[in-house]
Length: 304
Ligand code: AFP
Image (cartoon, rainbow, N blue to C red; front, side, top):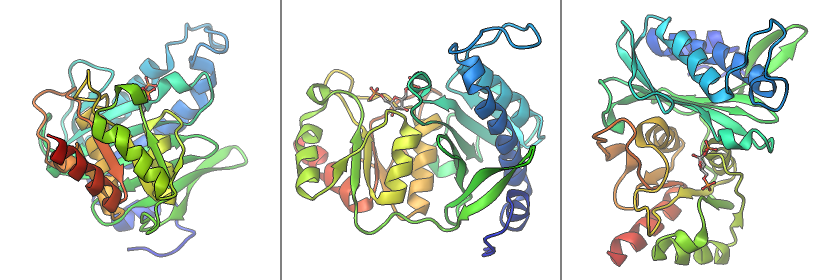
């Protein structure tokens, strides 16, 4: 593993990633800059007509199109499945990519962090998280960062502007969840949560954790990785499957979280063991520091 803090993304990938994952990650890095710069213009907040007179697409359609074109064009993607598309885009490579091209798009208007999530699978989709060979998430917030793992630790790069050029600089290698958990964030409404979850958040407060929730999975998980704790979009009484999609969101983030020393569960089993039968399958998600996730998993299991 390269240790130099001055390493730029291309050099880091050349030393630490197989050619296919390196090519896909580079394509995502370049495309995510296009998405990042387009957010104000294609969100409906500014003019819907760009300087060339073209009608703007909604930002989530735009980001989907940008990533699909870039990933299928690498020669490394076998297919690109997306939360925004009913069927995957087929290509000629060997890695199946599943993505949420714009996670938290309802947060654009309020300028909360948003993100993109990618899972790199070795088998045709839908398949289990055990077939992940890598995963990556992008944050578009105060900083634009790429956080990824190819199965040997979790690493992070940040986009830095130098004059008119933007480069990706190394921000951290082998990121690990801190031993002492500090924050929690649960999606949905308390009144809708299953009883085990409704009781569990009291336990978290008693342990001294603070509630910090921004409403974008990527943003909320990112602070759990930095501060330790737990994020959940839990099972709801009326919606036992929760909200998040296994292939596009939960499994890729579970892969990264496990590489950072954590654990992710659907309330009964490791999220990576779920074998979705359809592309858009959902599951509840409890992800973050192992001890907390195992605790809520035990409560849910003993309740049933
Ligand atoms: P949007 O993409 O519609 O903004 O949804 C974001 C999301 O899927 C995920 O990023 C959040 O964790 C979750 O929804 C938040 O949902 P609630 O608003 O119900 O808490």
